[in-house]
Length: 242
Image (cartoon, rainbow, N blue to C red; front, side, top):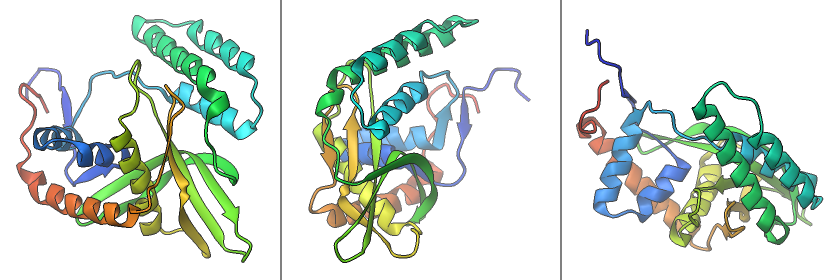
């Protein structure tokens, strides 16, 4: 057995997140290969995670009261948390910066007229040989005048200093709609495009599932079939140690 530290772990069965699938659809052929490779061989490097900042944003939206000063205070609390290593301090500062950016755009975010629920991890949906996964930051539901229960979800995107590319945001919103339609929802529930959204925490831009989301999801299903077919032959990254 090699004494070298492993750099990647291999995912044996084809698997991709809704977010990565949206990026895959908008990517060049070279980009598609890179995304598929990153899904099969997951890097073990310590990446900056934005879980705390996204949770603060989700709680703020659910509360429904625009206390921007409270957001800024929360950002400072996150930034000033005691840490034992530089990595933790970096994570805290990045999350604090997310909250600051969100505070600046929070008043103009386009939300649907619906009940807002907590985020959740959905069960993976099998799509043409690929397990598609989704973690929603918020969930939506509304009752129509004919007593039909419509549901949806919102996913957050954030990259420091970068706005979400509109094409990717639209693809991801369409994927949320397609994913929910393929999921085992509660009896009587039905996914609605207007309730399937992506929020850019940098700019406050909201991307709603477009009218042709069904066709887009069908294209994604075809892409999943292609990913499943190429999966066994996807090469590991250069220099990767499994």
